[in-house]
Amino acid sequence: MNKFEALGLSKKLADKLAENGLVDPTPIQDEAIPIVLSGRDVMGLAQTGTGKTAAFGLPIIHRLIKIGEKPAPKTVRALILAPTRELAKQICEALVMFQGGGHLKINMVVGGLSMHAQKKRLERGTDILVATPGRLIDLLEQKALTLSDAEYLVLDEADQMLDMGFIHALRQIAKLLPEKRQTLLFSATMPKLMEELAATYLDHPRKVQVSPPGKAADKITQSVHFIAKAEKPGLLIEYLDKHRDELALVFARTKHGAERLMKQLSNAGFAAGSIHGNKSQNQRDRALAAFKEGKLRILVATDVAARGIDIPDVAYVYNFDLPNVAENYVHRIGRTARAGKDGEAVAFCAPDEMGELRAIEKVMKISIQVAGGRPWSVEEEEPKPKRGGGGNRGGGGRRRFGGAPKAEGEKSGGQGQRRRRKPNNRGRGKGPKAA
Image (cartoon, rainbow, N blue to C red; front, top):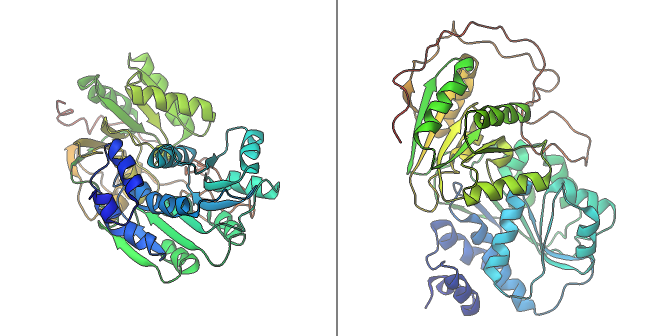
C-alpha cells in the first residue's frame, strides 16, 4: 500500500502522487492529513519547504472528489488565502498537479491580472479557490462570487498575512463564510497575534508542530558580516563572483533599493533580475521563470518573495538588508536548502541594523556565526528614524477597513532623518569563503 494511501487518501490520488515522484509523506503531511480527513480544525506549524501545501491540499482534494457534483455558479467549496501572488500561484499549481487529470475546478484570483477574466472563470463555480485577500474582497464587492457554500477555509502563511496588515481583510472575509466549516491555519512562526487569530477562527483545533517556530532548516549554513552600508555592494559582488554558476537570491528592504541593486549587479556582469511591488504580475512571473530555468542566476527581491519561491536549486541567500520583522529572516533563508539540499545564508549588518540582528537571533535562539568584522558597539550604532502614527513596525500602519494592503511587507521609511557616518571600511574581515 502506498504511504499516502495509508494516511487515508484514495488509491487513485495516491497513485497520481507516485507518478509525480511523491511517495514518502513529510512529517507535517504525516501528522496533518489524517486529522484534516477526520474533519477537525488544524493549526499547523512547520518551517518553510516542509510540504505544508500537500498537508492541507491533498485531504481537501480527496473529500471534494467524493462529492461527485459540480459546484453551483459563482460558489466556492474551499477557499485558500495566501499573502502574496507568488505564493498563491505556487499553491494553485501544486493543487492542479496533485489531482492530475481530475475534474475539480481550481481557480486563482490575485491582483495584477485581469479582473474580467477572473470573473468569467468564477461564474462557472469553483471547487478550490486560491486567493490573495485584497483581490478577493474586490470581487466579493462586485458580486462576482459568494462564499456561502464554502466548506473549507485555509489560511496559509497566516503569520505573514498578519505581518502585511491583512487582519481587517480576514475579518471581512470571515463574516461571509458559513459558521459551520473546517478551518486550517498553517504558519512557520507563532507570534502572539496568531494565537488570537486561531482562537477567533478555529474550533477546538488540533495543533500539529513538527519543528520549533523560528527554526531554520538544519542544512542551512548561516553567517553575518558587520559592514558599513556603503561597502555592502562590493562584498556582495565578491561573494557572487565565487559561484557564478549557482542560483542566488538576494533580499533588499525596499522596492527602489532592490531595483537599484539589480542594476548594479547587471552592470557588474551578472545575469540578474528583480521582483518587487513596482513590477507588474507578468514581469514578476517572467523573472521567476527565468530564474527557475537558470537564465537568470541572481534574483533580487523584497519580502514579497520570502515565501512563494519553491526552487530547489537556490544555493545561496543573501540578506543584503536585514528585514524589519525578525520572523521574515527565517522565511527568507528558507528559500535555500530545499528538497534535502544544502544551502548557505549570508547576512550583511550595517550599524543601523544591530537591532534587527538582535531580534533575529532572539527569535531563532541562536548566535549567528560572524564571517567578517565585529559587532557594532552602542556608540557606533546609527539611530532609527522616528516613526509617525501607530508605529506598526513593518506593517504599514492602519488601513481603511476592507482596503487591500500593500503586498510588500516593507517599511514605508522617509520619516525623520538618520545621522550619516563616514564609512570606516570595517567588516570586510577575511573575505567570503570559497564556494
